[in-house]
Image 1 (cartoon, rainbow, N blue to C red):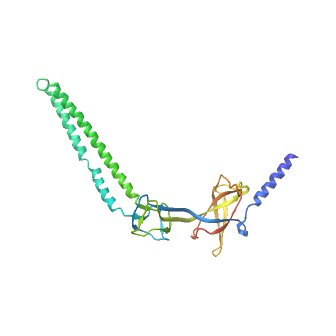
Image 2: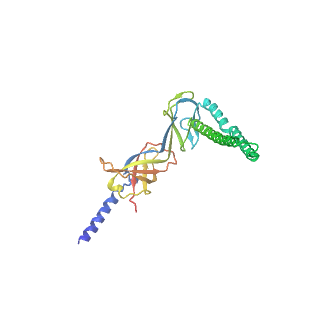
Image 3: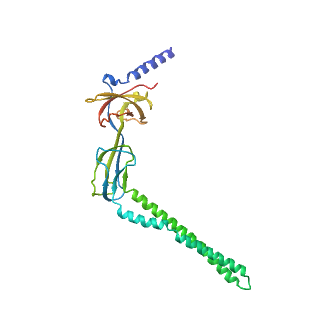
Length: 272
């Protein structure tokens, strides 16, 4: 008897949960707002003046496209100087030749024998050889430091260029060519609206039957009313205590380039 009651309870619960599935095609659904799947605002890490803006608002851009350039003329001159120092190996070559000469001196004195040279002279020659070895090590160290300074300066110049981190479109440009900009001041905003993301607040009881990768139906409003199939890409692990809901993020294709920010209706099908 208890088993039968449990089976009936389980069946009723399944019916209730399935009944909570919202049919967007019939005009019902959970209201939500579309947003870009990527939204990035870029800024320079140091103050300077804008020398070039390569795009205008509304333009399409791709990853690594150069968007905005700071004036780096002074830095480029300094970079050339550091490159010349980094490429210069004459100090190392001189130290190597000096060390080779010191080695020849030691060998000559040792071969001459005690009849021609004294132990003090041999010891002195060996000391000079050790000093030359140290000078060679110092020359190599200085060369490595010059290389590091050159690479550091190159990275600093790279930071004076804003490149697009995503494929998208220019949504906003806050500066104009020739204008000064402070460090971390917002300069340009890039968004990607294909696909769109929709964060839906779903009751916990309904979210319990959903799974990542599951299907969702999104109904877009007039004047270009349409219905698209999306998929669940994220379900929050912590609910909103005030509304007893979880955030379910739906990704939906946007080949027609609808603007983000529309109010839509989203329905879900229970996962099998």
